[in-house]
Image 1: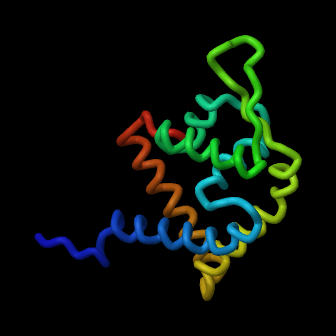
Image 2: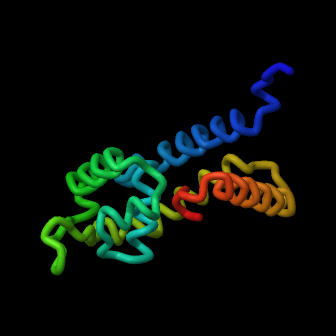
Length: 150
């Protein structure tokens, strides 16, 4: 029983994630955000004013990564942090006008990256691929119930 990377779903999915990040980064950098910031932006576009802990629960990254990413986003004028009204230890994270205005262009960049990676796929093939990915994620989360997004 040998390992063949081109037959390993784990290896291929890892490579696909890297390629998607590269494709998105190429489009995002000119817009003023990074591929790693996109999941945080999505959460804040859906519900502005979350705590860092809430963001950690919704985005699958390490605490240190989240803190560094939020610091860069604050430096770049995408978010601002405000004291939590009921918890002196917590801060609320809000989008700035610049972060809010970025929404349509950022989503367009993600869609363009998706389209580039799925070029040549028929509609039903894309739908099947998405269904298969969702099923794999469900299996992964069943194996590790503490995984965010479960």
